[in-house]
Length: 437
Image (cartoon, rainbow, N blue to C red; front, side, top):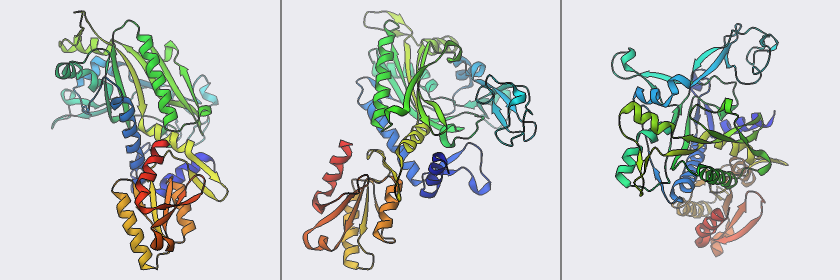
């Protein structure tokens, strides 16, 4: 079993990620996030919000709608440009994107189907829309057609004037949001790397066109600091600038931050210079003036720098970087700030009521301020190893000495070292070490 298979197995077994609609045979490219996966995703989003919104001097939060006016997607260029070329296996009828390996720059007769293995039996490439169509209202006709959003950015652009009118920000400033997006992807697997429903963490930073390069460089450095903050190793991360032919229709410059996943080096994050494409187009199409007047009275359409980060891809990179096999145990060496569970509390044995009662008191106290779980199943060694596998940084064991002097044994996940800590000092102990890591 290769590393990716082991991570997928761990995620299902331990409650990080489940296949979507599994009891009905599954639904391709969809996933449900179990208790630990939901907590990990929430920790990622909370950390991103703190770093990209709260710590920045002039960035405002937004929560835009998933369903927008159909005119938004006309003005943004998505109806025209948000397409891929598609090939279909004539044997099993599985569909694949023609711009991805092994179809790119190859003779189709020499390619074997990634699903059934049949060689050279593919249709001619044809245009495929990545938009999810839906309908508004009781009738399903052309007048009621709209699409689920394929990106969060457009909700920011169409609310640009609202934010300016409400808060009167001075350029440069940003508007950020986290939200679900939907893309009708044709993929060849790779777990949660590419899904049809996922979450984006995006920021549109509005600037004057002069000197855009310095703003671009600032956000690129910010994204690299984020990469280090979440614990991705330097030798697994790199950056690549897009050629003109592969840039999105709105972009003048795009850099991808790539991660070396077990299945290959792939895009993790993107940073784009969108110029004034979006505000200008929405202004012209809507008839609403979305220009900005600066302190000198100059009127212009702000240009935009866009750092875009996917939640699920972040989660997958974190899991791949954290997964470690050490002798007879598996460890997820998650950063404590990201760990779904910070502390696990055990009674040394489960058949001594005084120990159980004391341990439960410790659990309830810690749970008020930290993500804490209770476990009294099996022997202490198995409990330790189970917590190692889900990334819990610390385990607290209440033993007979606890009843005498009020101290407990605290075990560190990564080193397995143990030390005695007074119950009254536990929360401070863990909070301090979480911040330090």
